[in-house]
Image 1 (cartoon, helix red, strand yellow):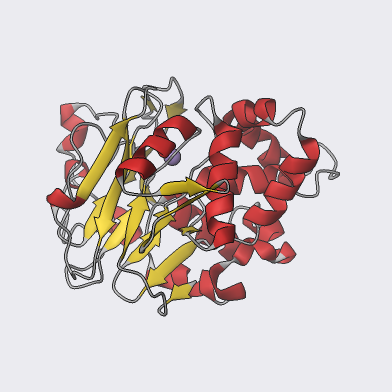
Image 2 (image 1 turned 180 degrees about the vertical axis):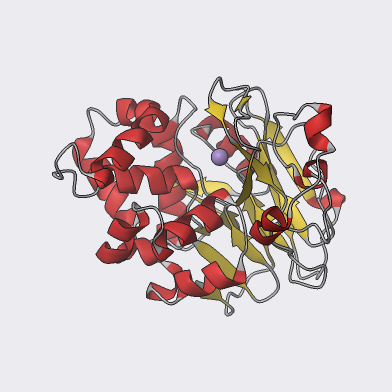
Amino acid sequence: MIIDRDDVAGYDVIGDVHGCARALCQLLQELGYQEQHEVWRHPERKAVFVGDIIDRGTQIRDAMRLVRRMVEAGSAYLALGNHEYNAVAFAFDIDAPADCPRRQFQLRLFRHLQLTLQEYRFHEAEWRDTLAWLRQQPLCLEFSHFRVVHACWDPLRIGQARAIHDGCALRDEQFLLDSMQRGTEPYRVVERLLKGTDLRLPEGMTLIGADGIERNRIRTKFWKKMPATYGDVLFQPDKLPDEWMQRALSDRDKERLLHYGKQEKPLFVGHYWRRGTPKVIRDNIACLDYSAVKSGRLVAYRMGAEARLYNEQFAWVSASL
Ligand SMILES: [Mn+2]
């Protein structure tokens, strides 16, 4: 979705909320927003959410309602995260037989959605309505001087997403169905935009993450020019053993990676579970996910009209409220 005609003084881009509604209220207040008639507004600014409003936290429904009200009232935008995608996909056309590959795909999403489904269990109609609303929201946002996507800006995949309802691609039933099938273009669009680039670990190697899940892939940077080793591109909280960090990338590995150029518009992402004090990755890339929920921070970046990003523009609250 392209937004070039907003009459505002600036935007407050907000990282993964993950059900931390109380922290979100506190952050909005610190940014100068006020709640009027159940909608948080700023007299001259708008908020932009990078996605992942649901799952993990304890006030998921409150967080979702708050964000939806802001978007519907025109005081915020939402770009979908992989968790919203999971919720939409999980619930879509669930009558397929259990042995059909799409149903298998949907069932694998369940473990991520348990807390959300639990909070909505006595609000079924509201949940269905929320899912229908999420399907109308975009997978990426482009403003005149900056961009927002949950995990990775890949021009090819962004173009494919935009070709369908101006980036609100989940509105399209066939896109949504195909996105649940490995190897299709919609599957690649969703994976790339909402989960980023990754590399498969060498044959037989796996890594057990802090979340206890065993993986054979690592999340990677999509902005590194001419990387040589796994260590050059690793971008996730779980470390690799030293000898893997120094391992050379093969030509095939390099083909899987991307390079977001230094001259591109500033880009905001969430998704990556950062730790510590928020700072920019580069003067045109900032990640706003600082692990809200797990005693991390809920982070915003106050974007004005400037063409570059600065550490001084971050604001945050502790999200272990
Ligand atoms: Mn997230």
